[in-house]
Amino acid sequence: MPESSETTIAETTVVLPAHLHARPAGQVVVTAARFTSTIEIAYGSKTANARGVLALLALGATAGETVTIRATGPDAPQAAEAVATALRTTT
Image (cartoon, rainbow, N blue to C red; front, side):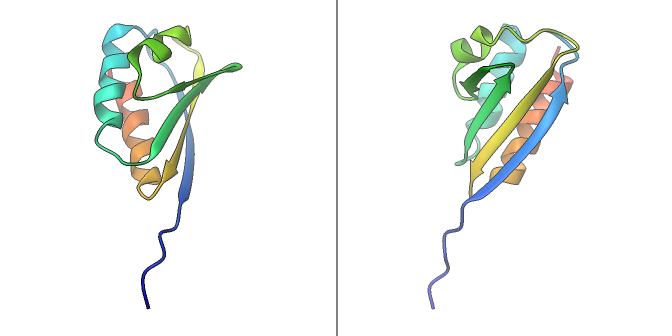
């Protein structure tokens, strides 16, 4: 019997230690590229693909604010956690 290709959804939140500027956005893009899942970051009413630096910068998320990371795909839990770690540790 063939294995089913289940889609997993994972969501986590991060309180940003620094503004989401070019350096952390770039680190998020590099991290997101390692996974096959679709990864989005939401801030307020805005959502951005985690693979797009300009889209992440357009969120306008600032230090101390909470963002939500949503990943959908076969490696969603790992992807969401890796992006969360990148956001927590890059200043």
